[in-house]
Length: 482
Image (cartoon, rainbow, N blue to C red):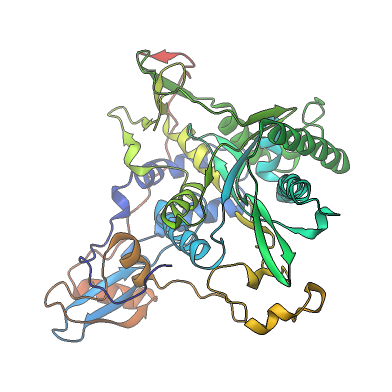
């Protein structure tokens, strides 16, 4: 569990979003991108970009805080709370969600990560069609749970797989290490199942997961996906007119660029051999690839939390992003590819296309819960952390077990508490005298914003977007840059 005490930490320094490469590229080229895009840009994409350009900017509103001892005032800018590519807001959600999973969702039992990726054509369809994507992801989670339940049934000689309770948490990512559109799933699955014994749920871990299990999951997933595609009347390999290109031509162009990697050059170091991999639990069938190499002892909460944070991370590591003198964007890979590629180069407008592709469709859930870990599961309260089974419930049979009482939703972790837990930064402590800081008011109206900023000697005008201009004439290079 995480300690939520009042330990003091170092002082907070307000971030400056205008120093980030992503912000600088959008500030300079977003107007040009809009002006030279033939198809209309969907509103959910423009809202994402415009909200990001306001995120952390005092001129769009802030909270006033003051020290109760010396009266020193600080301003805290509002955040955009978006899910596409804002490193700050996704980072907050990453930290908050991972803490919630460790404290209140994932039990202290072995947990295995199943990573499922899809063919290029499927990624394209799933990037836009949230209903199709949801059905495919549901089929993946169901298939993995079925195999685990069957294995537990075999180990314990049970009558049916329905006697086994399994659970999983799925994280959906829309990106890969090359900043391409790559809709895929990281699913944390309990590596075993719960079985009723003597009126109590007891977890039985699998002895191991074999290559046969992974192959079975991949084959069964692909069979189900083929049925789903047939039900929706979509065949990625048919060569028929693209329905996305007809209804959303902008997304069709953006997704096509972001999937293929069109418009990028690569910096190659042929002497780099850090790409070696020893994965064994991997299977590929049809348009689906599954691997289940990593398993963690659920009692190792820090390691499990690190895995959750990895699956929830933002698409772009800001520290590996830089602007070159010629205006291109360079992204340094965390690990070199097999051919030695260690960096990618993007023209500014191509980089913006990638950002647009990372924006998920509205109402599409990026974190999903299945089985006994889902919020509506009948016996969830008996297995998740922080919940204790009253002794009298052990006298009931599973069919007669009383339903859990209705409880309030878990509140979000306060911003100040989250900063203290993650970065050891204490915004409740005055940087002048060490006294307690309290919130005075939220300033949201433009005249009040200007007056407050003038009073504190800060600029009153927000950063301005550069006007649109003719895009650079670029011949895209698909080769290597030595």
